[in-house]
Amino acid sequence: MDAKKIMVIAIVAIVAIAGVAIAVFAMQSKDPGELKVAYLKKNGYETEMVGESKGFFKDEGVKVTGVPVTGSGQQSVNALLAGEVDIAATGQGPVANAMHEKGSEIVLVAGVNHSTGGQVWVTKTDLGITLYDKTADNKAEVKSSFESASTALGHAINFGLQKGATTESEFKGWLKFMGIDYIDFGDTATTGKPVKLIHVNASSLFSTMKTTSDLDAMAASEPYPTLALSNISGSVKIGSNADNGSYDLSMYITTKKVYDEKKDLIEKFVNGLKKTNEYMAKAENADECKKICVDVIGESSKDAVDAAWATADWKTDWSDGMANTLYNTCVKKGYTEITLDTCKTNPFF
Image (cartoon, rainbow, N blue to C red; front, side, top):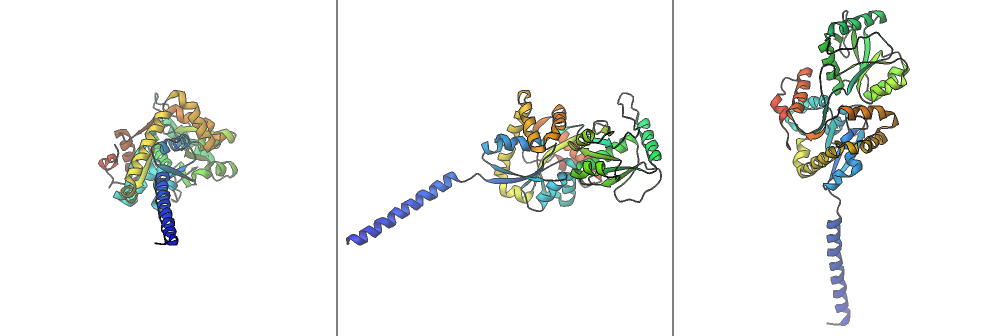
């Protein structure tokens, strides 16, 4: 064999070896599998913000890309069902809607906070609404004050809230608890109903109430109520879902298709949620975690973030209490095909 042929063979061998080395290096340096998670930059999504910031998901070997949406948790669910993300962070209202619409295609992944008092009702001006007193159980007085306010206005109290959001079922449940009748979204006005529900995207509630005469009041989750109380002179907090002992549930869901394809990654994601909530639950980490959330949501959210920490139960779980909250929401919405056993189903707990 002449020298030229030997040289060609040697070069080919070197290139082949180099190619194998590059392939091995690429395999070793390959990014971990990715999960896209839809969430809102507002209260109720603190676990996602802290987990991403502190790198707890990355530590578990999963790349989590947060995909912010606006409005309410319903928009997170919409993004999931449209195939734009792998997981939706949301509250129990949109989850109930998804279960009703898609049935067994919806997979409950985990709950991360189960607390009350995060759904708040605010009037633009002082309408003379009586606050509920649990000790006195003065529901009749609360109802009467709503009727008087409606009479004084000359029309039903126009309450802005987002249709389909967790707030819808929470506020309707509160009204039922107080014995207050209401005109539902889009219904023709009728006498004897002191409250009218008007659909407004949650992120637009504050500005709509402040700059127009369309709304007399709003019902929303934080930070929107605190934003209104801080910036609309004369606005008044008149109640919350703590009055009737109703709970908010921050949770994550996916679809069966995504779960079947990415079960291992989702399990790593849940482990990251556990580490995040364990970190958030420690008192010595509270200030750092609050700052992370305020940096994401905005400086105006500081009071609302403080309020969230005062009532939160940071725990990655799927307890009977969480399942009951989801089931009760389904009942409020009239989704009779969804059973308590269905709500208790969870792949990781």
